[in-house]
Image 1 (cartoon, helix red, strand yellow):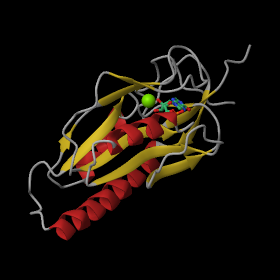
Image 2 (image 1 turned 180 degrees about the vertical axis):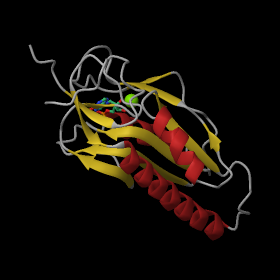
Image 3 (image 1 turned 180 degrees about the horizontal axis):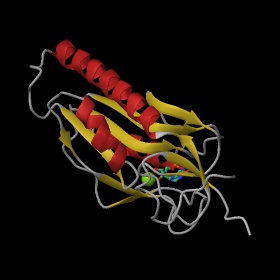
Length: 195
Ligand code: IMP
Ligand code: MG
C-alpha cells in the first residue's frame, strides 16, 4: 500500500498506532493486576509477599510489550525470561516450537503469567503451558498483545488479548521479520516493496 515507513526497506501499513497500543497495554496491566490481587487475597498472602508472582516473557518478541505492561502492574513480582524458537530466519511460516534452554524450576505453588507478543499457530504457548503445568503452579495466566484470526495448530488458553488481528504478517513493537523491525513503535503489516 501507500505510506511506507521512510528508510525501513519494505512498504508497511500501520495496523495499530502507538497511542492505541499504549491505551490497551494500560488496560491489560490493570486487568492482570486486579486478577492477581484477587488470587493473593484468596490465599491469604500479603500484597507485598515476595515470590508469589512470576512473570514469564517469551524472548525476543515480548520484550517491548512486557516492559510497558509491568509498569501498569503495581505488584511484587519477579521475572523469568524464556526462549522459544518458532520463526527461524527470513520466513513468515511457522516451523513449530522448541524450547531453547531450560525453564525455571521453582514454579510450584506460584502464580505464573506468560507474556508473549502474539498468539499465532499456538505452538509456542501450548508448549509452554504444558511444560509449566508439570511443575504444578498455583495458577497460570497467558497474556498476548495480539491474537491472529486463524486456525490453530495447537490450542492454548489465552485469557488476556490486546487486539484480535487478521491473518497477516505484522512487525513492530517487539515483533520481527528476520530479526528486524522490532523497534517500530506501532504494529504494521509487512508488505512487498512495489517494483
Ligand atoms: P506460534 O507458536 O505460531 O503461536 O507463534 C508464536 C511466535 O511466532 C510469536 O511469539 C512470534 O515471535 C512469531 N510470530 C507469529 N506471527 C508473527 C507475525 O505476524 N509477525 C512476527 N512474528 C510472528
Ligand atoms: Mg516470539
